[in-house]
Image (cartoon, rainbow, N blue to C red; front, side, top):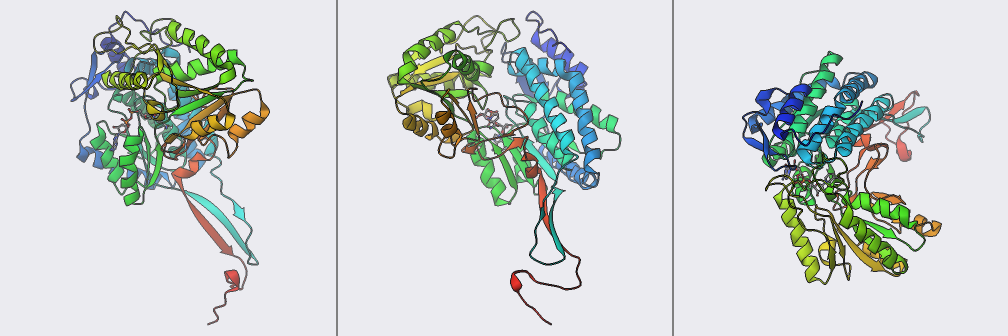
Length: 512
Ligand code: NAD
């Protein structure tokens, strides 16, 4: 299906209203509530969303808990049927929901639609998974015994999500949780409740078609962090998947640990790439440009640090600076735009602060200024910044959620790897090289310390089949593909004795 037209002429609030109605969101949810939603494209308020009270949140968790008790008894492949229907509903809504992502977050339309495609992809993955959810059979030391492991549903999965992937993150969690026999309570970012309401309405259609799913299987809580805290602290939520800043994870992690809840933390990144002398520089240039400037530098996997070998620095970096000067910044709905707006003024201030620190540290800064004349006063468009740093230090060591790429020269590969790993975050990474030894070393235990390590591809743009997440201050969680589903289930080890004797393990005797 082609993407819905993204006209720059239509007022955004009216377009949003039309989309929400088409997607099945009741007007009472977004017409006169307490939470003002802004479009970063123009800075204007586009909806007033009704927030969930903490009493309503607790009641929703109660419904989800009851739903889990019934849903866990439904066979996995039948649970997969619900996710198959969810995928169908998402396919039907792809153009509208993708455009709503563009209007609420400011992503260019191919990225808005791409986010919905990712939701469809994880549904497909989860449908197949619903016929697996396998455990192992393990050799036992006792004769005529069998030992195996069984995976059981876990309970209510809490999901807290960030503004920059307003709907995909829910689906990574929800599609797996549903086939695993869990229910889901979702607290989206307070900056993006509209796409969440739309996703919830789409999911309700899948539930209606499914027919006999228990009430409360998928719940939505709209509000600020205090509503998220209700999920964090509720003992009926055995696992919480929290996506957002490392600062958020520092608050949420200990509270979950205090009640022994399972945490899937997907936190900030400070992703780097190394460009070595043998690299295909044309390919590297394209890979770097997308990874550093795409989504206006507002992906957790955005490329933020670039280590370029001395021998190619003066060839690659001037070419990169030229691309930075030319890339089209503007209204994401306008044809040819590659870099849309920052989410808000706070993001702009954070970016300018990091650039001022860079200048004070002796950096050469290309770009980074506000681009005037697009949207209103409350819209923040910036030219992406390329910052040539004299040393790997200062603001390069932290994540600034804006399009800043710090470039540092290196001469020894060991040094580049050391700098690469010398930051708090450990999400994604890449190397551009045609040297097999360098590539293998980068992916080895002595190379990148990140959860994702790529070769000749930038660090951003993951596929659903792999497990997604990172180490260190990124939180250690894994979502989406591979065996990430195991975080949504509990494992039981079963030993069955089919003999007439009772041999004890380790040769222990206990004769009564
Ligand atoms: P944020 O931390 O400001 O907010 C994220 C979510 O957490 C929101 O829903 C917010 O309401 C909630 N929240 C904040 N504090 C909370 C608390 N104490 N208790 C409960 N809930 C709380 O992040 P953001 O600005 O929306 O998103 C950008 C950040 O998210 C970046 O750091 C980015 O790297 C990170 N991110 C990480 C991933 C990943 O998979 N690792 C994916 C997307 C974004």
